[in-house]
Structures are given as structure tokens and as C-alpha cells.
Image (cartoon, rainbow, N blue to C red; front, side, top):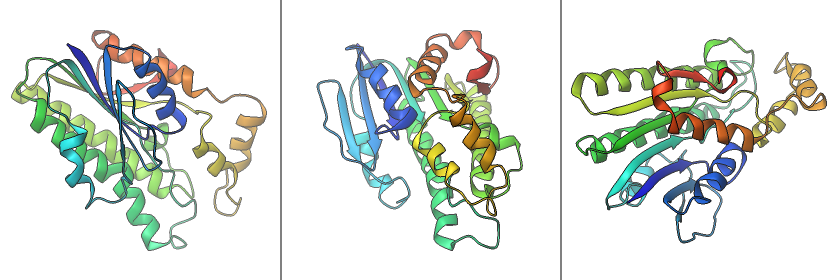
Length: 241
């Protein structure tokens, strides 16, 4: 039987790094979700969807969680948005709504569907939510990103508590990937100092080659998935293993 991986944000950055590693194993079936269109293949099914559209997402769940027998299933909520970088009081209302939709509401809907689909199946079941160290920090200009990642962490912890209480056998992780060389970092470096006081620090990460490659972080995510027994607790950080 094949392994099934559901991966959001699969077209670029860490998501593309994860996709490349996962599809390289012909025993894996990957369902990928992204706004950008991509070609499907023998073991990759792409679904074009903007996760900010929380009304459209529920209509796609049947295709996201396909029928079939699998040895293991894993949901990787990788898609995320830094949001509009600006202080509270200067944000556009639609930007506020969109970052919560992408970073919190969409993962919640997918986690809910994952439990409904697989909780009673006797297979290996894992959910990895890509979080951020920003969840535990106050970063000016990042109110949306910091708060949504904090919400994602707590949601993941509650889901693990429920899995333990109800015997679902689902393992949950909220994983901080470190500072990865992705388009999100480009957005951060383009912020105005008046909107984000640490912008020069983030520019130095790139200039000093301190960013981790998506491929390297993807390998860490795969290690976590294949060695779950080595990890205690929900909150994890790739820089610690």
C-alpha cells in the first residue's frame, strides 16, 4: 500500500522542497494544493486553490482526501503568508482577514477533515503544521503573522490532547522551520524600516548566507515524519535536530 501525503503551498519555497522529496519516492502519493497551477503526474495530484477562499475550500475536501487504502497518511499544512507588514492602525482590513484565513482557518478546516476521514482507521496518521518562532515573539509590523502562528500552535496542541483522550492515534506537530530562503524572506526584506524595525537584520541574514535552503529543511521534516518516536511534545524546531 502507498503512503498518502496532503501538502499545502506546494508550488514554491519549503513546499516545493517537500514536494520534490516526497514524489521522488514512488511509494508515495502526494496531493498538493497551491494557488499556482502545476502539472499532475503518476504519484502527484495537484489542486489549484487559494486557501484564503475559505468558502471554496470545503467544496474541495473530497478531492483533497481521496478514497483508498494507505499504509500511512500525513497532512502537512505548509502554506503560510507573512501578511501585510505594517503596524496595527495601518493595516488594510482585507489583509487582516486574509492572513487569518490562510494561516489559521484553512489549516483548521483541513485538520478537521483529516480527523473525520482517518481517525477510525488503524494506520499511521500524522499532522505537521509549519509554524514559526515568531509565534512566541512580539515583532513590530508582524501582528498578523505572530498571532496566527501562535493560534496554530495552540490549535495543534488541543488537537493532540483530543487525539490522546479519544484514542485517535494521530500524532500532531507544530514545527518551526527556522529562517528559510523563500519568497517570504524577499517580502520581509522589502519592508520599510518604519513598518518593521528589524528589516536590516533580515537583510543581513541573506547577505551573510545565513538562510537555510528549502531542500535542507524538507529533509528535516521527512526525518521528523520517519522518526516520530524520537520526539516528545507538539512544538518542535528543526534547528534542534
